[in-house]
Image (cartoon, rainbow, N blue to C red; front, side):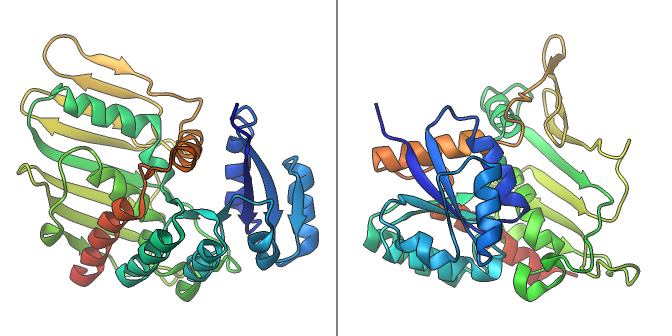
Length: 327
């Protein structure tokens, strides 16, 4: 039997709690420790999530020989430095998304990964969630025929507090779409057909000056796939959604339509024959557990994870086109 993967979280914020709760459901495949610049906070997270140890700074965790891998779960500004330190120390790395701020940063990490001979997984949990897996399968099975249109909607009125680090673009790496919309850009580009980078255009409404959350919080992205289909992504964190959470997206094909709740609660596939109502999966609705299983598999098998640096660089290329074209 394989020994558990010994994982240290670098950073003890909200997202580390989300990861920890999902890791705890993997039946002992992973044991966790926690590092923070605040030793008391690291110890608190260790107690709360039944970890095996805590560290009063990130360097201690990276240097500890009992740690096999780290999760970089701090603001994006610090991802590159901590990832390079961890690879130099011989650790495998899972780095939260957005992983790095530029394509040059990705290339630097690819070189460091290859020198170290370690696994780097970019934490795009949405790649692994049941909804995304189901959409890819249905398109591969030609359920709606050749795709014509793709319409993605992710809208919610959810502001950040004044002291949230995401309000500081130097910490977050960019506005709300860069920091969070990257997940939906990945979904749109991971269905099978590839988005043509040169076709991508971003349209950003003026930012509101009201309230404490001063970021630009909305973006519309238009693009074309390599199979000729065209798509649009509507992203906002300042527009109310139906019933305070319901968001509906659609894929249109020449033989039918797939309608799905954007969070993954349900899906309706209308092709030839009777419509199919599907519930892709609530147990791991956001894909974190599948992501960690892939991380373990890649480390133990000495192979690339599904969300490799190279796959994430495809998303980064699209993101850079959005901001180069934004009007």
